[in-house]
Image (tube, rainbow, N blue to C red; front, side):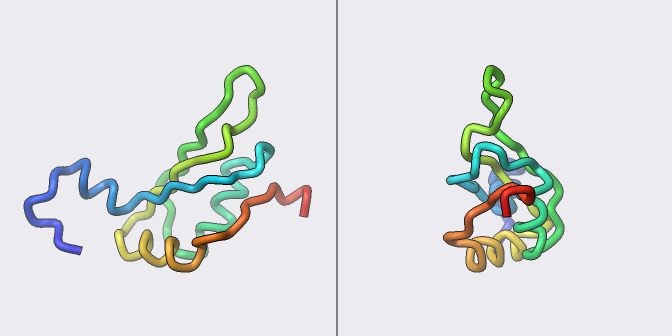
Length: 87
């Protein structure tokens, strides 16, 4: 992907994947176990419900490189992330 003329924020966004449909009991390590197969994850931002202390059903996964992000999108288009203890 061409990065010339892109802002720092735009560059970061090329390395980030939105993950929806998470099981409410899924943890960061569950997300890393699935999405880490596409490349090196630098950050998982779980969006949490502070009252229920569970995730809101979505998160953002950031990869080291944009190519890894593309690979994750292609490989995990309809994947379900379920906590390991429920598998």
